[in-house]
Image (cartoon, rainbow, N blue to C red):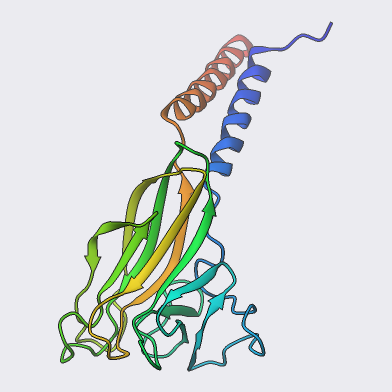
Length: 222
């Protein structure tokens, strides 16, 4: 009969929990850094120093307004990759809202994270020109994203929110300040599961057991 040593059990436990933690850290958001625009007919990639407005992107759809403006090294650079989004877009009704539907586990805790910056060189614009809101299943998550920027570069800031999955969840971002095509910038959006405290405790216990066995073996060999 095959015997399972304490070291083997501890290793299996640690590996199992580690695998679960890796799964928990998987980003549920598709195209969170807006690098992929392939869903747009006739446009596969933006040239450098250009922008365009899209009704949809892989993972994202326009809910209201003129559409999703993707910029590639125009009025600032991306926080992640080379492209980012502005939702005070162009054409009629420039203030736009976009959404992505996520498949989650009901009751599971998640961390919603993204990076926001007021558009560069907007210090002389109306104070609400960069305003943007984020919604989880229709509920506004505070604080409102706002501010002006008197520099020629982005001032990226990370925002993180604790949200709970219901099975199918809707993540939305929307511009709602002055409609002047000078809106805030969004990049690097992610939603990841938060590991249960018990899982972390089990991982630490497994690693501790492995360390104890290794120390005993070393002492016996001395």
